Length: 225
Image (cartoon, rainbow, N blue to C red):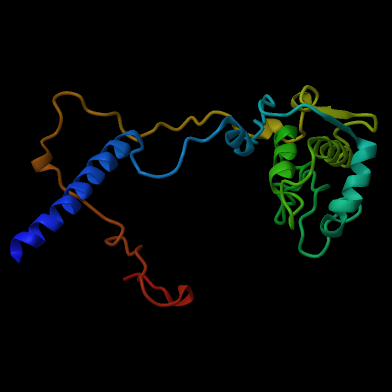
């Protein structure tokens, strides 16, 4: 009886072995064993960013202030107000000039943003809020032109496109620091004649300075250890 069972199981065992070997070869070609290579069309669907300083990534198309007025009234005014003044708790898009150092700064497109292209990029990927990334490129260009015009940054006849937007000088551009002067580390690395690590001692810690809060309880009740 046992011999019959063994002979019956032998083909099944061989089948499992072959399947394992084939699966192993497939896994070598596809390390995770599933999925497929993304197509250029799929990659293009995610590759939608536009770089602020030079406009790299902006698509073909254009839009003017007049068209932007219509699109804004239809898609944006309910939250941002007819003239970008903001409705309820939704943010303002205009004003705030000279307020960034005040007790209540108003960081709007006109008072804070460093690049006009960034405005196009944000509208394109995130607006309108209920259905983001639904607007055609021409309407995004038109909205960008309209909002820049509301902030008196571009004239009424301005046409936004991939060539004109990177040339727009935003009022707060020069207030940004484009290079970080801080070193990666506070001390220069020691390459020779370094201190003996066995002789290095920790002289103080945050806990020694009574700075470490308790890790339990509400934030209002936290006290140093």
